[in-house]
Each structure stands twice: as C-alpha cells, then as structure tokens.
Length: 108
Length: 116
View 1 (cartoon, each protein chain N blue to C red):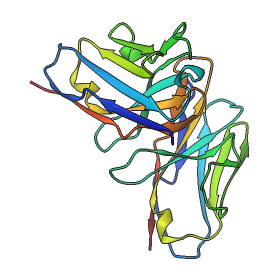
View 2 (cartoon, one colour; view 1 turned 30 degrees about the vertical axis):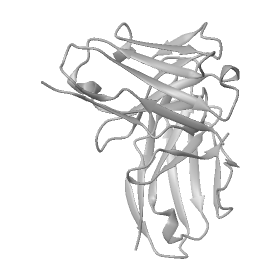
View 3 (tube, each protein chain N blue to C red; view 1 turned 180 degrees about the vertical axis):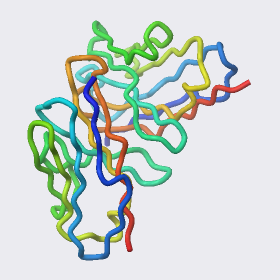
View 4 (cartoon, each protein chain N blue to C red; view 1 turned 90 degrees about the vertical axis):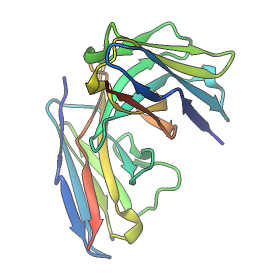
C-alpha cells in the first residue's frame, strides 16, 4: 500500500503570502492529484496529473513534483483559499486509490 | 451540467444492511468508471470501491471486501453500493464520484451511521 504523508497538517497564511503544501509518497508514483474541500461540502477536483488545473481553479494555484515528492503551491494566498486540501494517487495495487490525511489551510 | 445525487443513507444497527444509490445526469454514464469514497466524521477521505464503465470489473478496499458490493445500472444511469454486515467503523459520509485514477465530479454525499 502506498501511503501519502501531507505536511503541514494545519497552517495559517496571511493574504498575499505564498503557500506550499507537500505530499510525500511511500513509493514512487506517476502522478499526484489534489482536491479542495470546504466545511460541509464535497471535495472538488483541484489539480490533476500533478500540474493541470481543474476547470475554474485560479491560476495562482500550481502543482509540481515527481517520484515520491509532490507539492501544491498558492502564489498569493486569498481568503477564498481557506479549505482542506487532499492529495491522492492511483495504483494498480490494492488499495487502488489512497489519499493523504489532508492539510487544513486557514487565513491569518 | 454533471450531477451526482446520492440517496439511501441513514441510521442502521451493527450487522444490518443498507443500500446507497447515486443518480447520475449531465453526461453519458456508461462511458465512465465510477467510485465510492467515504469520509468518517472529522476525518479524511477514504476510497471504498470502483466499478468499470460496463460493470465487468470491480475493486474494493480490503476492509470492505466481502461485505460491500458496488454495482451499476447503465440504463438507469445509477450507481449502487450494497453494504452488508455493517460495523461502527463504516460510519461516514459516502460520496459517489466519477472516474477511476482521478475523480472529476462528486456527489453531495449520503450520511451512514452505524450504531445500536
């Protein structure tokens, strides 16, 4: 089973600040995907195939990485970015999909 | 507009069964693999099961194998999750999601509480 470890678990950023969330995999993966979830709402696809923004995602967001280390970056934090972000990978092994434990991002 | 609407959640006693449904609209349901993902209260996301576009292949996480069954009716554009021998640790919001290696659409979720 591939385990995804996200860091930090919780963080607060000021408006305009650059934010980086990291996701480390226990074994090498080909791609990483990211979801945004706000309280009481369903997860939304956010970044797929490591670096492609889902429809409607502001271009202040970006994704990068390879092998066992991936990241989601916000170039300039905005209030609406407050949410929990989950990374996710797919594997042909079981379990097929695994998620990171999430990073809760708050505004300072 | 892509829509996924879950139903069938509720309170159930340990050891009993429950069947969730997910009605899909706004896309050609039979073209897509589909999945169920759950989220226990105040916890993270956990993949439960995936079914291929034609229903010929199914995949489960180990903790639900033999207890849960994912199925679909393409004529009705509906995804199902039959949950048997429910345990307290199955308590969660269950989301229906489109896709397999990445999920590009999610339902609003169905709440399942397993408690005596």
